[in-house]
Image (cartoon, rainbow, N blue to C red; front, side, top):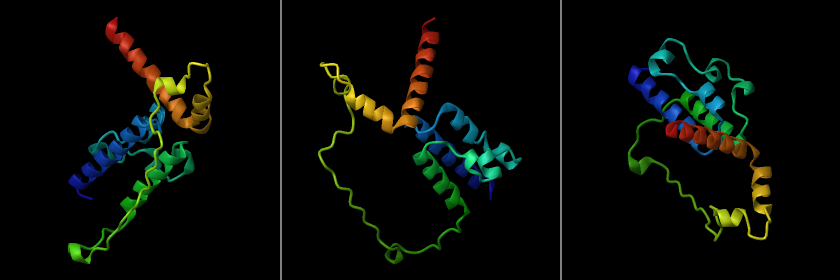
Length: 150
């Protein structure tokens, strides 16, 4: 792998991890554990433990984050597809049905005026990993805000 290819892979890998952290699919600890320090460090053999020995212990606890990371790691091992013209490439169409589902909730939706927090309890129960990572991120951001004011 050339230096430019390695740098591109390290950049894509670390961006994927940052995106997963931004979506609260990874904790800060998991992000640091899985990220490359730099391409030059990787060239010297300093790679995340995930690449030293593919073990389930090295993967994050969140199943969606684990799926995305494993998919990217496996794709690196594949041989590149042969170059072809656009006419020779197979087409792929994906239909995503869209219903009138609410994707984002306002504070009023989460905390109804009648005191019911059923929706919030549901979200915490079924998205436990994301909620724990979300709270960690909020606490980190609140601490950074207090330091900036002091």
